[in-house]
Image (tube, rainbow, N blue to C red; front, side):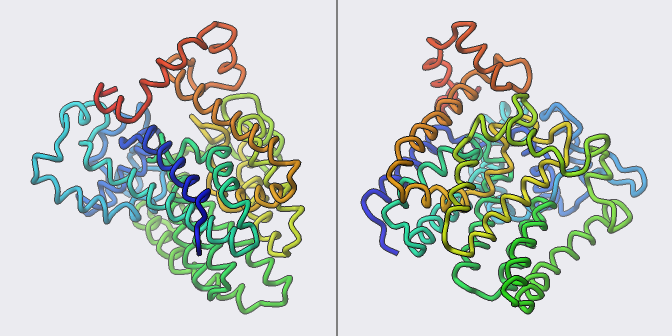
Length: 428
């Protein structure tokens, strides 16, 4: 794969943006994944009694006591912790060097652990972001979008929820999911053995349980092509991870059929038939934040995929449909504090392919760039005003704070204080 000058400039732009807003500490849902990482990686157990203090840092019941088995657990999946384990082990070894101890007392009080340990999670996410971007360029050039590649990748990054979850919220799983799904799609387009695709999707299921359903578009495509053998091989490749997950449930909750979400009760009164599609796409509330209003390029990329002449588009559109079905099963919303509908960050590669299809037609170029700039502006407004919103901000609340209340002149100052290096120096 030969990268053009514009491709390198696009990579440089993304890299600089990540560097500017890089946030190495744990936040939000990241506390849940981190408790498992610390429990398994440092203490060698899934009993998270030593991680109870993260409830104070997270402001919620991140770790809960499960009476039936007498262990402390978390509702979050164990996969992210397993993937971050190698780098986390290295940071434990670095404990012996004073150079890597930066304001330990501050970070212990605010986040529950020291900076060098938490950094392992952010760096793991960035590895998968890099993998996703590399695969995106490779596939675009392989599929005949060499001229559109640089702009499609830029728009896919800056115009999707990944703009936040590859920079400021790296302790969430979305960057890792984007990388894993990119690997699965690379294997698919390269016609690698189907069991390898199943293997990757199995790992992805350990990261987010519902990702098991991403196997469905691949299976249906092969059945449509009268290729039953590859469908079976995919399932076989994923099966060991499914069994591992059931074993984890059995040890933690006394039954392989009780998931961490069931044990914690977090899905109680927040589950329905998959009928809330319009809510996912067009909600003006904070949870979920409607995909169309925050990141319209994601919706338009689906249109691009439908226009694509390659029949493999049905796998990519199927991934969209699966995720839309999964996210529409919650009538109260499950995104919590989210920029756009954050789960769609996983679809980075399908998004950039759909955008590349549209970019083949010159008339789409300026509108797509304008919409990408619109999402970047919303990212700035959403991030800079986070300390002033009343809870999770909806789009009308963001507009009210900046425009109606006249805070727009403060944007440069407030945004400057959110830059990664500034936060580290000021410890805020």
